[in-house]
View (tube, each protein chain N blue to C red):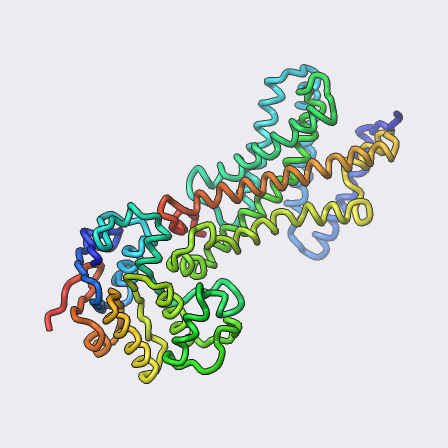
Length: 265
Length: 198
């Protein structure tokens, strides 16, 4: 395997491309130059820190440290999933719902990959755990936040329809059939589209990275296909558990529609 | 017999009622005074405290959806969740038998819901609940969107059901309707229910 190492000068040179953005912003008075600068600086600092953390982590190969980093990642993903929803639950469940589902889904799928296909040694080797978990989390997060957002907003806007069914003696499950379907569809479609477009429209990032690092394209593609399947499974599990948990929280022992548990904007 | 004891929820002051089968009471009151809240509370659509029984059977002893089949709330604005009217009816054939009496001509059951006017929706929502055979109907302004002629059609059907033993609690803005329909009239003021003396 051969790959071309980058020097800091190479990176600095690439950073000059930002002057195009800045130039546009100044010339057309878009007023985005400050935000652009800040975002670029954040990106550099965040990624550098992550690089250092990963370096230390890979060096120690401790199961506990790996678990800690994995949990922190899930925690951040949960926060991001909540921030992307227009509607969410009041209190703990606003954050806990997405985070719990992500923990379940990403945890199961990552372990599955580590124990069966990848045969990492030891199985908790952070060099495998962290990148795989990261890729699965990123996609699961999108799916879960889309599904929850759809479910909660349809429960809210569709209140008349849902309560009409409840009033006629339908169970809460029956009354929520349409919103649940639509939420699951919303959560799963990005993965389906992603698989359908892979290779034609976009070259997936991981595969590109491996090719740049000198891996045989066919080998890189095999890895990418594996990851796509992991992502699809993780998203499905995540969307399913998030929707189920949200349904539990949307109702009570008397099968009422409890919109009072949602945050008002 | 529907018995309500000390039924309360946030703005609703404790309500107690005893309604034998085949009776109808009417409730009037300003918008936002809590009339709909009371109906929803009896149907168990909102969390409440207090006791409600039907023919001696405790509400909480029944699964919620079974209770609501017996004690059915018909909201002022009707909800429709599928495309065709008939799909919302448990037994469209039985319902079709009432259509003419409610002023419908033609096969409404095969219409798309989007074709219905507000008044048509209102009558069909009532019919949808009625043909399921509830013991109690909680009607929230059931004729608010209807002309006098259609209103009297609905009222005569309701009278028939009352004679057959159904209990009705009806929210209405129309004092004349309250007199036509009910044996007892109530007024809701800021969440407090009181009987009207006539």
